[in-house]
Image 1 (tube, rainbow, N blue to C red):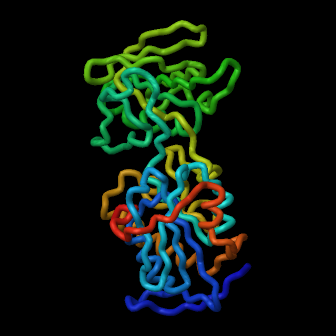
Image 2: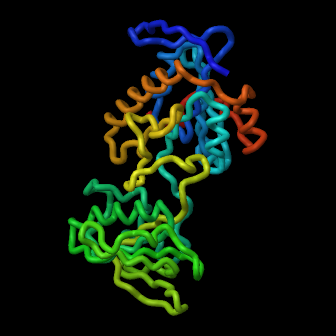
Length: 332
């Protein structure tokens, strides 16, 4: 289905998209990050022809967002397991999909000592000196896929802060199983990379913070290694983002928020600009609203004309977030 549209002007002088007949543009904001500015900016540009679904995880179900903004319909949809939603299904049912996750954190490391200072999530490792990465001589990255590769590169970039010497990668693979991390180079940023695809993390030791780890070796033995940093890079990108192009930094590859190689998929938030200030984040949301509005003018229309909520309710147990219009599930 091909939409027809004309361009009008908003009160602020911005171009506004106006749809002919009963056609509406459907936009999904997956994850909820990005704040009111993005949705407000999109509503202002698109007017009555816009429907925005802010699709959030069940973990955010205690907050609500479902109001009329201008002439546009904005509703929040809560999905118990948002990460299991298929990217292809979203593309089939929306004119535009905006991936607006703050981060992906599957589960804590299931070993003693995982709560010690110096044990952290992969997406918390950034070039920012205040990100919480202490000086280290040996770091341990736990994981076997692309996420772990990105974490190793991110950790290596912090090597200049101290006497960094080695990053040990524990893949936890079965005997004979190949891992993505096996393709890592022997050195990065001057630091040795020791990939142990079948190595397992058994314990993290320390008094108040990490000072050693116990690892399970390929031959079944265990070994105690001095370490000052442990990075949880287990798990892969969820189905909702499967196949999206990724930089080696772990960020989604994009041009001004438009995901590379796609016509109607966008990214907003930390997966677009890691470590952005609140002001930069707000400006990115404003700019992306303009990008999405322009792309909607040439939208090919969703494959399915069924209300996406009906599909999400049937396939994923979704519910509408109703009863409270504020505060938003999206951070301003």
